[in-house]
Image (tube, rainbow, N blue to C red; front, side, top):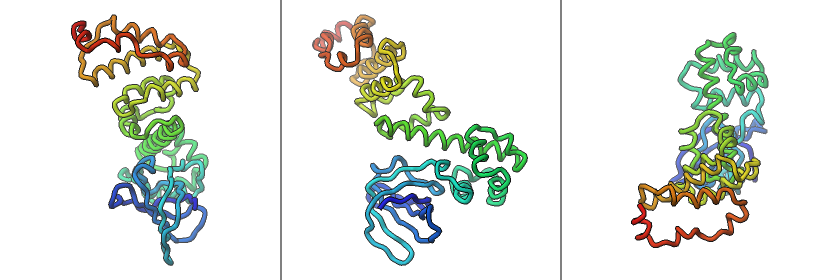
Length: 281
């Protein structure tokens, strides 16, 4: 069974994961689907006011509820399936749009007067000034900021999933870079090597992204990324310094084709006893 649900409630599961309730977006039925998902299935915790795609099997049901164990689930972009009623519901129920004076009546007026598609277009562009004719300027600006943040979060999660980057980095990544995150990552995917402590194989994943984006093997950003991850690796082993000479072999590797680099044996320096490395330092 695969459904698109608008999330109406979320609680933590007794043994990890989440239990969330939702109603189908394609029917006006009041029936609630109660979904149980392990923590590793969710791209991140679901939130009330969002729309999620869920796939799973029914375990029980009664007149008002259907209970499901999920096999997979993921958030859906609100703009990709949006109708006037769904957009109003999203703005009214999502916690991001609470606390700055955007009440139900203002939301109804805003969506009705501006129009669903036009409102989404203005919010995506951060063009809040055009909304100040309908609602207070301060409220319009805050609404635009919150919308852009959620849009950036969704696009970042999609980018990470498409490139097989574990979503365990998403929270820290969005904290460090909360504006135009995907655009910045496409400009320099090697910035992700700073998460090597969370993702041990981050270099191979980043190399795949860079290859798909058309990065040259001699690109300066690749060389910097290789040196950076090498230093992180040394730091994680307890070293606090490294000589310039020791870094030269690694920097030369960046100029070799990726296929050769993957087959290359460990450098001679890596084979030296730790005692010799200590003397060098």
